[in-house]
Length: 300
Image (cartoon, rainbow, N blue to C red; front, side):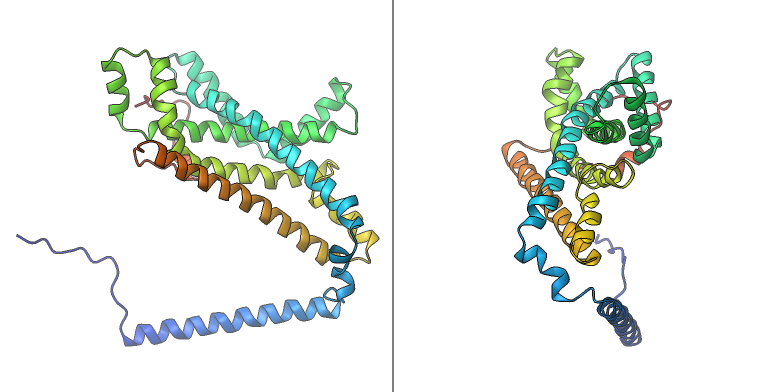
């Protein structure tokens, strides 16, 4: 007996196709009008003149004095935050799957607390704490504050990514490990974590991109000399070319994050080819659907 297929989408008829075409044309006209208005406004303010953009192509000092040092600071802050937040997030995520209620509760409290606070507030608190209780030089204090805020927030988010990746594995993985006499720690280290890496990778990369972008918060509020903070001195020294400066900085951010996602895609493909995958994938928003600290779920 043949089953009738479920129709999820009806093929549009002639009237629907005409209506869709009309809406598409109206949207394109509206978009063209907005683009024209933006370009005309920038042209009226002399922001599209070649003299505003020429320094980025003809004057090496704009790169040597502003952009490259700012890019270096951005990469340093993001790299430090990644290196510290990844193992800390893995430890917190594994702790939330512990059989011991005290460990599970403590890890859950830390994760939910820091995940609920905006990263900018964490940076400001860290900067105030370093200023009040340490003798860290004011020159490097913004870097410490930015890295601390990024680590506390992103480690909490990455903990949920790790927990989601482990819980996404089939329960048979744990059962098979128990059947051959492996302890829980061995099961986690040699069975669950290696297999969950490929499932976690898309969400991990998404969070790493967030880390790179959030370094700009330190420049806006703490005076950290990162890419976005370089716009004001560049614009002041090169004829108020604000639009050109923002555009170049945005392109650098896009290139930086594109390189990160490209490398992660290559790594994910290599991992999937190197070992058999369970097929589980943790999406970037999946961690929000996990249980709260009081609603413990057993690891598979």
